[in-house]
Length: 277
Image 1 (tube, rainbow, N blue to C red):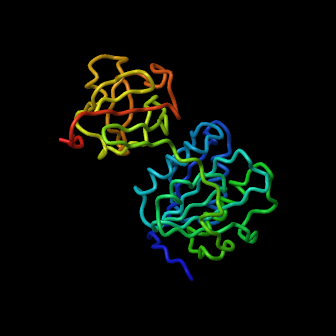
Image 2 (cartoon, rainbow, N blue to C red):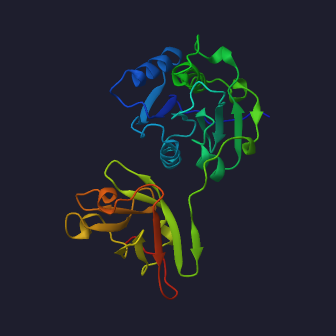
Image 3 (cartoon, helix red, strand yellow):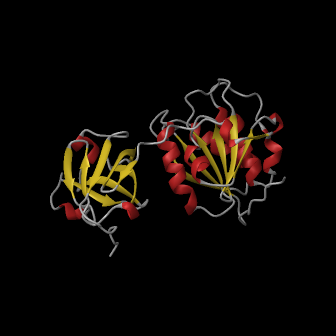
């Protein structure tokens, strides 16, 4: 069965890597893509994923892709096992295409977006030759993303796989009870803000927020409302999740916390979710 994906008028490819900008890797990747699909518009989602941090890339990609036009090809490469027998994947979900290694980088897409089509990248006619054992982004994933952006059918890149066959990262802790939630920090941004996996619409108005053993208090409207520099504050971030920040400071450094740290909420009575007013 053919997969139909709405294509934008101008092909768009988003790029998510841990390559940084100090070396030439990012520029070379872009050059290879444009040599295949010159009309593509490349959007640098980020090249500053912490080195080898697949989990951070998975979170960023899942929360950023809905802002792109339908039909965008999302190239995501954070690949500690490059050169191994690891598979390459094409995921088709929610009218978007995702290309990258089978190492859990698409975990949130596969878990939360249905239906999902998965294909293994085995058609080497779409690859750059010779294939390096250290730069699959340049030689496999980039060329495949470029071909897809310029109209290549998803089915042509390789055979279909079941979503149950691919690697998924462990799900973050999330325990919801009648008057409490215990969850965890799932992402730390460059400002030191600690983003949790607690959706804003689950947080009651009178919820008390704690990070590990540090009591922060109720949810505030902004970083500024913390009142003084260096004070921890719980707010709803732009992604729609509860996060711990600090006014003009790094919450991560202040609290000595990071991804995986425990965040808990507790409240009394039949509280209503906080209103954004």
